[in-house]
Length: 153
Image 1: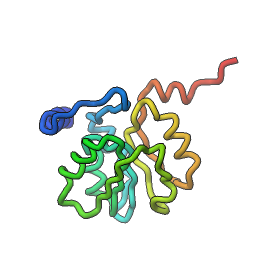
Image 2: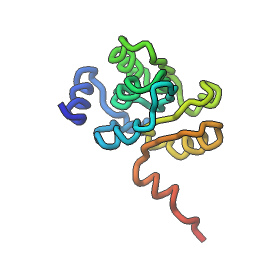
Image 3: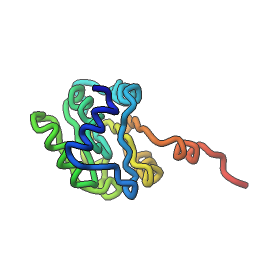
Image 4: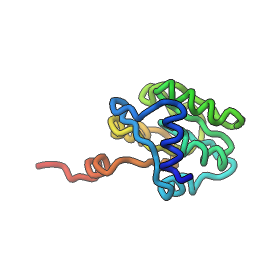
């Protein structure tokens, strides 16, 4: 089963869909998944923002010492808890990432995330103001274009 098929299966199994109002999007590109997790090592603690169905979470759990997920949607938290109940290196925080002080969670953690569309800029700004040195995020092209744009005169 490829990643897109697995995502459809999970969406049907848990009767969920991406909430546009939350800027949710589900990762279905295998190359992106591998790239995002490639620098995670066995003794790392990783903070994942907006894990959704847990596609990236699964890879991180296999590679890292500990994975802390921060998810606003309680149904997605339930899915993560159910899917990965046999892992002892997972912590789930059901909260708005904009209310969580990431720098106080774990010193020397890495942040890996497929960011929700509508609050990407706020999250990136908050992350840059922390002491976290290793941030690997996937953002939508429109947001990247906006971040990289030259100021208007």
